[in-house]
Image 1 (spheres, rainbow, N blue to C red):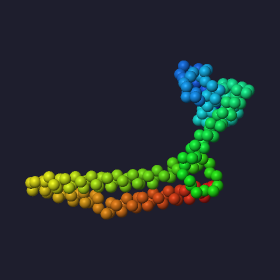
Image 2 (tube, helix red, strand yellow):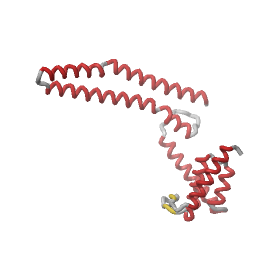
Image 3 (spheres, helix red, strand yellow):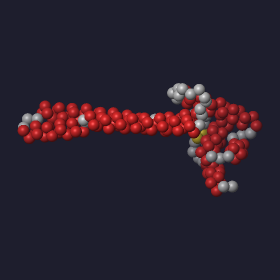
Image 4 (tube, helix red, strand yellow):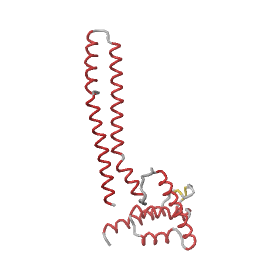
Length: 201
């Protein structure tokens, strides 16, 4: 057995053994917290499946552990059917949250979420930066106007003049052009990555 596979299998077994012998409570499928011994067959199956997925355990070892710890016969069959149905309901609910991507072919749900999470943050980061800059510009201009209103002495008026000049430098049209270029670059990168993924398919 590959050392990495052996390490994952050992981690999987250790986690299940810890849940089984631990004094802590686990959340059952009815949202009640119970010790392992009092969990329903569905609850035990849930924790075993979660651990197997986390450690990337092969099906054979997963199935053996389920039979050893979650029950046998009709009890196990019913627990498995209930678990599969619940997972399918959750996947369907997740799919309903995604926007229509206009595709006619079926796309694995994990790929759709990967696209959403991998390629929208850049656009969102650019927009957030632009909004922050606009807010800062508005705040600085408000301070500048207020300072000008309150200035009385020649020294204060000189300071206000210098401050207004500074505000003008950091909020002029060139700053806006810089952010517009960044947003355009983000959008181009996002389209390019999406195109690359489509080609890989």
